[in-house]
Image (cartoon, rainbow, N blue to C red; front, side, top):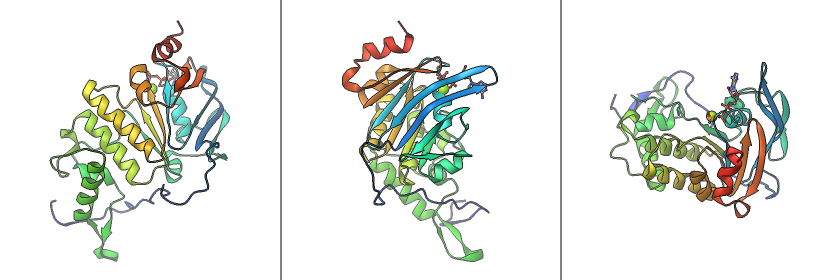
Length: 272
Ligand SMILES: Nc1ncnc2c1ncn2[C@@H]1O[C@H](COP(=O)(O)OP(=O)(O)OP(=O)(O)O)[C@@H](O)[C@H]1O
Ligand SMILES: [Mg+2]
């Protein structure tokens, strides 16, 4: 459909995230999101053991580790996918017990997984809004405001320095880096206060990785607490304010950038 309006799907409306520009009493020392002494077991598999990390507003916290170190498990605990076996998550210093990713999202914790949860055949703007489209009209005449959707998608992407040929083009025609950018722009548009990115640069070439790293930095510069998961120290180092290194489910380092040159970061990951 290429009309100015589209019918609204049943149950499509989603609450907007808590707006980041809302005045917020924030103590800079209190992490926006914190995982405290998290242990996670899947049957006999110990994925995390007493893991601790904190993400502060306006900072990029990098979570590093080799394959199977427990990175995705830790962010899934933070994002409400897994209730931890032990330990607690704190949002703005208060304990939270998310029972689903939706609950975490409603509190401003947006997570972009590697597979991105986008619909390849749908346009960029539909993927951008995915169920939270602005509407016009009332009752049975309520329709998705396609013009506004296109315009807002364009505005948000342009603000991040992304020039798409056409917001109507299907997401499947975008490069991996552009898709990551759309996902990040979407989270910012909906007011994410915490943005968790699981290996956003893993499948990308050099140029595209650099672009995505710029978007990561951009999100933090807008006051978002960013958690950037990667197993590439050279991707983490230029954008990270703090580095948390996991090895076999345990945190083996938690240091600010000044304390960790990139070579040391790589050595910590491999345990050499
Ligand atoms: N749902 C699950 N059920 C059983 N074991 C799991 C589950 N999820 C993770 N694990 C195990 O927990 C450990 C940590 O996995 P996790 O996916 O967190 O690692 P990772 O650091 O993200 O690795 P990668 O870099 O490969 O993505 C692995 O041994 C994995 O097999
Ligand atoms: Mg992973």
